[in-house]
Amino acid sequence: MKFHIITIFPDYFDSPLSHGVIAKAIEAGTLQVEPVDLRDFTTDRHRTTDDRPYGGGAGMVMTPEPLAKAISHVKAQAPDAPVILFSPAGRLFDHKLASSLSQQEELILICGRYEGVDQRIIDKFVDMEISIGDFVLTGGEPAALVFIDAVGRLIPGVLGCKDSATQDSFATGLLEHPHYTRPRTFMGMEVPDVLLSGDHKKIEEWRRKKSLETTLERRPDLLDKTELTESDLEYLRNLKKS
Ligand code: SAM
Image 1: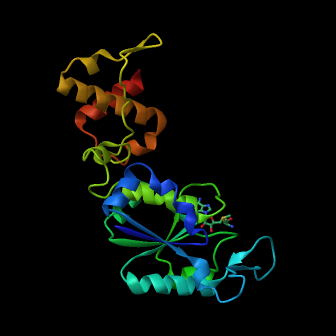
Image 2 (image 1 turned 180 degrees about the vertical axis):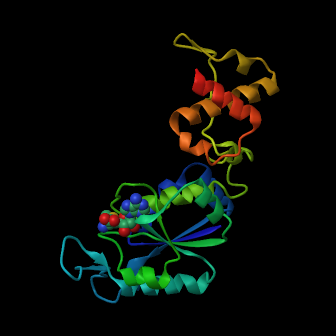
Image 3 (image 1 turned 90 degrees about the vertical axis):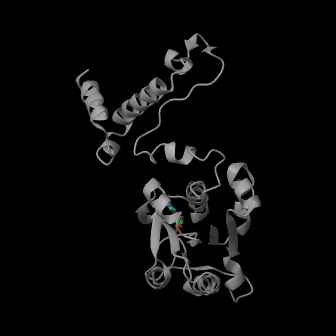
């Protein structure tokens, strides 16, 4: 999968993408990340990409001309790639959206700065606006990093263990169960006996129950959207009674 990122800070991505499984996937060619410097599409000496807002008010707005040229330039190489703009006004990013966008071969990501981009760019070129949460960042670049990490790890071959993406929180519809590793006793706290039993069926049952407990306690809204078995439902009913 290839991510084209239109940004005024193309170097922003160097260090974060040079660590861990995402870096390995880039090295292997499973993922490609191509920052496109928006300033290369400006025509003035100062390589300006912003201007004062019509109507007045605080801050600057990203001007449409360089953005239109940059988007058209990338579109010429990737005509079928959806154009995504990061914006607090966008659709809230979640696992379902990450999973559906991971089916695309290429994506064009636009990172806003200042007060955002001229509305006519959105009207003319943008297929989807995405928000990574109900807060405001200084720019779309950190949102793009979160997005690339979350979508990239769903691409087959990116994660070392092929099952982990499908068993993680949200992918199952629930939050994940707790994890333990060595040592068996840590600061007087023991690893639950069942995890040491070697009984895989019992371990799976325990993990499912813990997953249901955590989800009920922290994100009960997820339970309404998840397919649950009769024994899950019975366990939840008992938990609610206790
Ligand atoms: N004036 C905008 C508003 O009030 O909604 C905020 C602009 S913000 C300072 C600059 C850029 O950061 C935005 O254009 C967008 O690309 C990015 N950004 C900020 N918050 C974001 C969020 N929650 N999700 C995705 N992108 C965000």
